[in-house]
Length: 358
Image 1 (tube, rainbow, N blue to C red):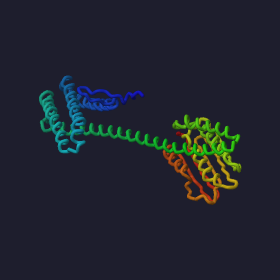
Image 2: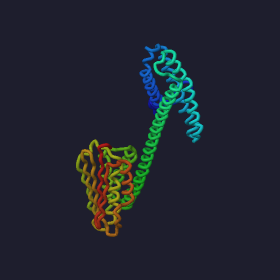
Image 3: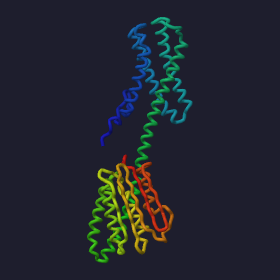
Image 4: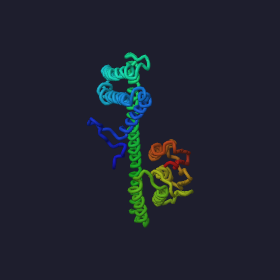
């Protein structure tokens, strides 16, 4: 993968140190602004002294500030401040400012006192005071700029870590679904082969279609909603074959899923939970009714199933629903709703997902 242009490394002049293009551009813009400020502030020197003195004044100030700024950023900060050697750090900063004052203030005293004449009551104390506080100001701006860039880069790294962690957790939760599903289906197929049922080839065909979906399509971040619904239909048909008492099982789909995308294997836990904790535990006529409504920007799914009186009532559902809830929180934060209604003889789950930004 090619490195983005702004992330490419360039070598600093007169140094073996490399920085990113983005870093170099930000700092270049900062010094262009500083130079522009001095050009504007000292423009009167062109008429009062000469163009040469004007150029020398601006160039000397900017170069001296650059030297002090990068001594602070690349030497004093990492060697002293980052190691909590505060006294040495502030001492070195003060020495660098004194060096700037010695050079710049005497040049200003000479320029204003002798070259262009006494425009004001020029004296060395005033020159020292002006240059001291102006140097502190620009040095503080440069430190603030560095801290801002470092903070931004740190936030970017943290954001990448968070995204990678969420993706890893989503993949882990999804991997828990696949083995559970395969275990159930293979058990069904085994039972049919023992009975030498004519339905076994149909089960193998549907299972192969579902395996293709699981192996090739569900690894993507999102899949087409119509494929997810087709996968769910196949699962229900395979489960229907399992029961000899022909339970009342239905799945209605309203709306147009074409063009809609959804995270893979989100609908399966709803139906899988209904079979596992509902239909399979009902000795007589168990039932499962599902409704899927696809709106312009939202997906609504309702799954209701019969419930045995011996089934515990905790209002939470099984492990599959717990994993589903966590996946929804990771994949659709603030864009989903999952409600469970656990009654004495009926268990229902309602899920709504806003697909507008999916």
